[in-house]
Length: 79
Image (cartoon, rainbow, N blue to C red; front, top):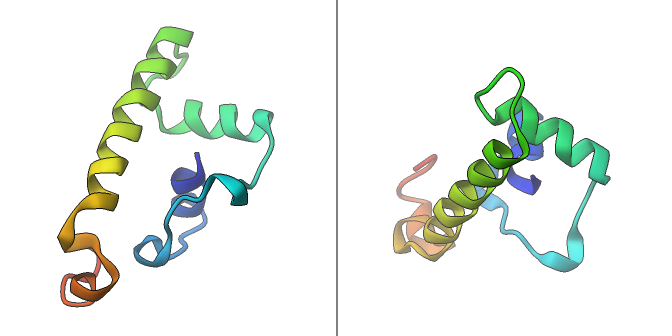
């Protein structure tokens, strides 16, 4: 949700890293955002769960990627 909400507000995600102690938003805002980006008009809980698990997996890989690190990431803006 933290990435999606910033993406929706057109913030620069190249400079953002998720930190559990700096969580923004409410549960209601989170659910609304997840439903918006889930890709289904009326998603079930299973679809939202699968979407969040997949998204978390991809974001963890991205955060650990050398191409997305602050030093190398400057050469690959928006990667």
